[in-house]
Length: 318
Image (cartoon, rainbow, N blue to C red):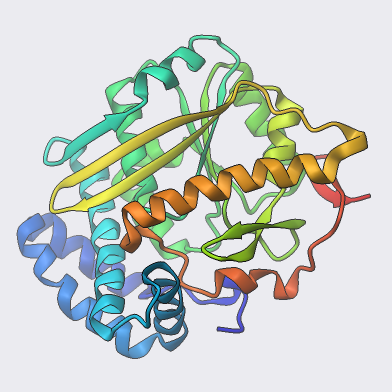
């Protein structure tokens, strides 16, 4: 549990993902899902840090020590969404049931032509949110993802759908390149999706109350939103079991304002509101939370700094 999340190796590797891909695509979804049970058992037995983190998180949510069955259900839910990513990219949403909430509100903000920042989290399926892009081909969608963290998975998904890979902004680039790419996409009226719950080892973090204890969250997404002056919408792609997903869009701010003379408290207020919405959906779908490390201690290698700002595309302390 002491490792920062970036230091954990990618699960499975290229051979395991290749095997899952072929089982899923040639055997069909029903047949492929049978293999989720041995996969779940394997990861439960072999990945002790993730198992421990899952139990600690579920214990917070349920208010009592999580059982081995609940931990395996958590891992199984994660594995199911990973397998569904393969089907969503290979065949689209035709074999799934998608319920959407707040899509009309997202459309209203996109219609302004300024672009929209879509803030998600490691909760449910971010891939399911791309189904909206398939429904609206006229709506440009860019996704900020770290290709270097999961190279085998990235390679697999881009092989299935090269056009999706072309829409990715690689988060492993330097800060200036990332900021310029996001700014350019917004100028074109695009929807730019990024995950705002997990801080990288070099990022500035601030604490917000989350499941009964302060947890560190990155400030970069909020300073980016202030700099670009575009609407921010929260998104949640919850897996409901079987073939069902619920895609939720919640307007957060038409424009993020962080005054320089009150930067710290303003950031705390924004991140606190974001953490409250995460906590709400954690209780709605507890097995959808996919941060398999000690989320509350993720800043062990990145001390929280008091008053950050965005300089040259990077977030730094003053």
